[in-house]
Image (cartoon, rainbow, N blue to C red; front, side, top):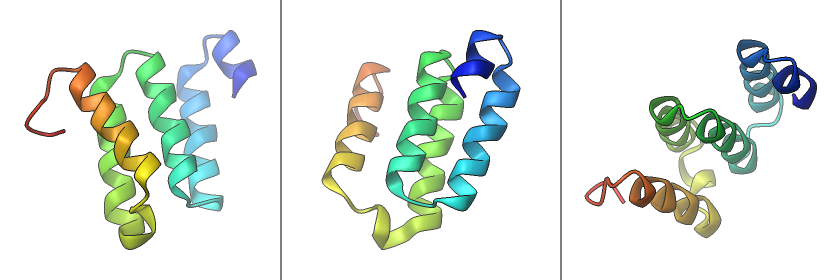
Length: 83
């Protein structure tokens, strides 16, 4: 993924992250993908990844670190009611 990012192949980096999520469906994989989207200033895509994690993992996503990251993301983007 770092190679793709350095080469400005952001769509390819997204494909790598989606493949990683498919093969390793944990909240940490989703966090990594959401952080990547945040670094690319793609807040809607990042929000979609957080929500996808909650939808696909259900109870497994109920981790304090995940919810703190999601809340920080929403507060940073001034979406206080969503946080």
